[in-house]
Length: 72
View: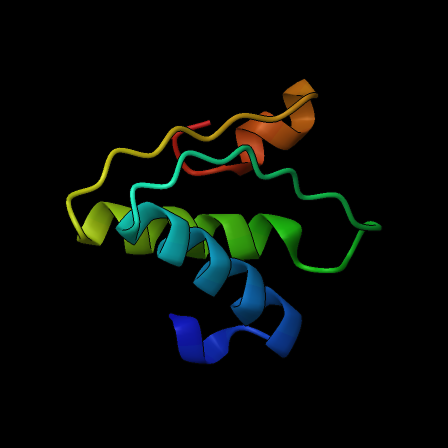
């Protein structure tokens, strides 16, 4: 999945995975204009984390955004 991400999306996923590996508690917020791939990036990230047997919780500030996230 990571190979399908654009460079900035890949950077976000790498930052999150590094924080998870380091067990470094962080709050990371993703904000970008519509159509930039936020949902795709987060769904890829959730899939990667679940494949590593990590627990991940998808949350969103609106109902529409929440239903687009895997498990949201």
